[in-house]
Amino acid sequence: MTRTAVGTESAWFDRDELEYLRSRLPILYVDIIPVRQDASGAITEVGLLLRADGGGHIVRSIVSGRVLVRETLRDAIMRHVEKDLGSMSFPKIPTSITPMTVAEYFPTDGPDVLFHNPRQHAVSMVYVVPVEGECEPQEDALELSWFSVAELREGRVLEDLEKGHRILVQRALANAGLA
Image (cartoon, rainbow, N blue to C red; front, side):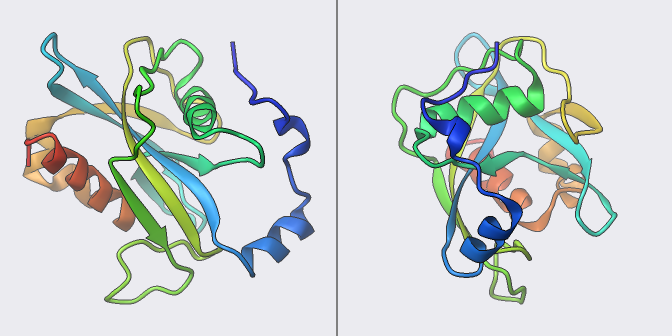
């Protein structure tokens, strides 16, 4: 069952409205790093999506998306996890809605820009979310793969991630004491 936040059905902007807003305001997003945990709660695997980016390249990414008007962060997290991983993924949304970190995406790229989004200035609340159910790639995702912490430490998988998402996965592992 897909959850819809109260009042979000009228929260969508048409294309022109959204482009106007993107040119004038930072847009709020959630970035979600899906993980599998062992019985003690330690992260054992990280789920990464494979999708085509806007430039026609195939890249790995994390679950990510906009927060709608009148939508709570908790509902946005649930909606995006279900949208990308399926309704049977059974995410365990944290009790505290405090993010692991905050990422600020800029439309201009450069050596000092850690997070780049060519469409807009965006601020993203970043969460590590354990999932316990069956996950299947949905929407525009071509594949979902689970990588062990050891595979991620080797770095080859991280090289396939979008620049900003690579940094977020590294921060998540460091935050869990696994870097």
